[in-house]
Amino acid sequence: MHYILRRKITVLSILLFGCYFSSHAQLRYLNLEDHDSKPFHFGINLGMNRSYFNFTRHPQFINNDSIRGIESVNSTGLNLAWLVNMRLSDHFSLRTYPLNLVFTEKAIEYNMSHPNPLLREDSITTKKIQGITLAFPVHIKFTSDRINNLKVYMFAGGKIEYDMAADAGKKKADGLIKLHKLDYGIDAGIGFHIYFPVFVLSPELKIGWGLRNVHSREEPYKFSNVIDVINARTLTISLTVE
Image (cartoon, rainbow, N blue to C red; front, top):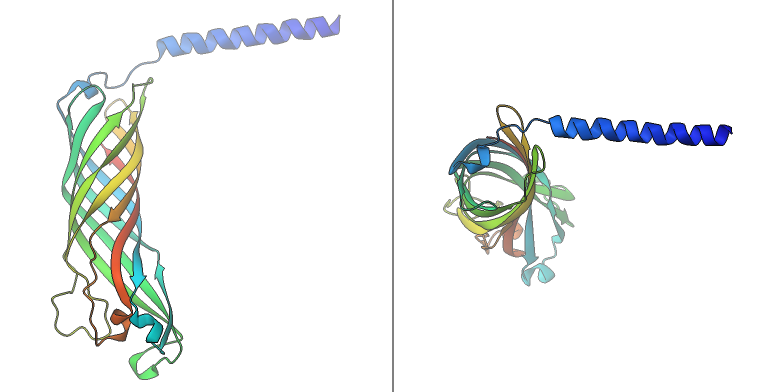
């Protein structure tokens, strides 16, 4: 008898909760219903990046008796950008960032067998390379159907970057890793559009691959001549407000 009573209460509770959520879903208000039908969207993007160098060792590294190992160190930086999104269809759009500043601080770590204290070298010597980059990406974005106040999107595209802090043209750069100012690469990522009453918030994850060898190799400098090709890699987590 008690078992039958508990079962009826359980079934009734499930029905009540089902009715509640059903009515709640029907009464749910869609924020910014006409937002996605507009031809252009504008927004401000703020992000944090983790960047590093992907590099190959030069054959001269084998013959070097001072440097035993080379590693790239992950570093944290900031992104600040202005977004322009052009609607192409219900699910596709073209977007870019006409103003996109990327602040990075990459580093290369050297394991030294014979460090020179006069040159401020240690058994582990780190060479930091700061970057202030103007980036111009162009992405094709695919967006899912809207589920209440949420959309999922994916994107991919190319980019051109100009590093204002790169020092490949400097004549006096003893002991430095010199980089070219211009780079190009590809981006890919995923994000979410969350619709609020007066704005759309979009958290996003993006991976960037630099395709150009940005290393300006200097034969006389031991920290540079042991490295051949250097490509930039970046992982960015950001928020966009439209």
